Length: 319
Image 1 (cartoon, one colour):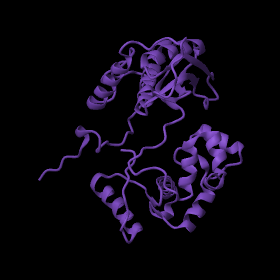
Image 2 (tube, rainbow, N blue to C red):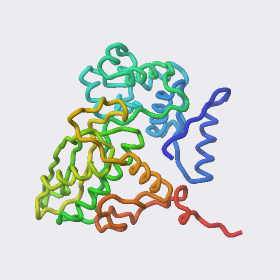
Image 3 (cartoon, rainbow, N blue to C red):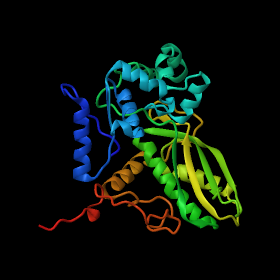
Image 4 (cartoon, helix red, strand yellow):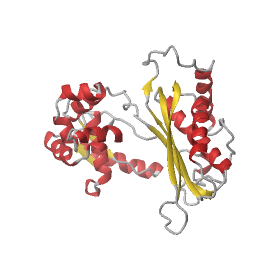
């Protein structure tokens, strides 16, 4: 679970209730959480960020008063605002919008014209006007990345291809979860750049798909082409990555007469793959040659116990 929402209407002491939530979760499932409360969902998310960032809050921040809201907005970077990605933050900075307060005070019409209705809603929410319903989810991501360090440095191409296949599968799964399509991908490959004694190399290539898609097979085929372009033999590689860009919502694009038609049954196939992996565990159905326990996988000797997601790791108590 990433987050949960609750309606605090009618609760007299919000901070005390927030502390109770933290204590109960810590006691019963051992999960540390931050609790942020405010008048809109975007402000509540920002309050949650502040509650985690500053220990003086005790992990709980009541941001329902306008004075507290202004104080936090003036110091919070705009990149920490819910729904503002890194690319949007860079565009906002070009307009001298650096903090959450800058965004809240900016001309709404200009925001809507430049960034669209989602950014307008975000700015209004920062100003205390609720625009996101209680059961609505976050704005879709503008780009999706999947990447991890290899457990053991790799010099040969085949295991790197396996790793890339696993990362593409994960990125495509995220893409479909927000009902988006991607039109462009970027494949990256690098050695351990912090190692000044060994050979160093880093490169990336950006490629356009024939048509926007969420089909793992189409994305993977192009990604493997990109990897072939940037791979250089003899280097001890420590990481590869896939970045999905040019995202659009499924159903919003007008089909291009000259674009290739999607594979027959692709949408249904991907949905079935996602359903099986969600029910039986990630990686149950894999696309591409990805072994169950690859040598390149990230080392996990220091992994914390997963009491809340793995039955086999739940602590047993004898009566």
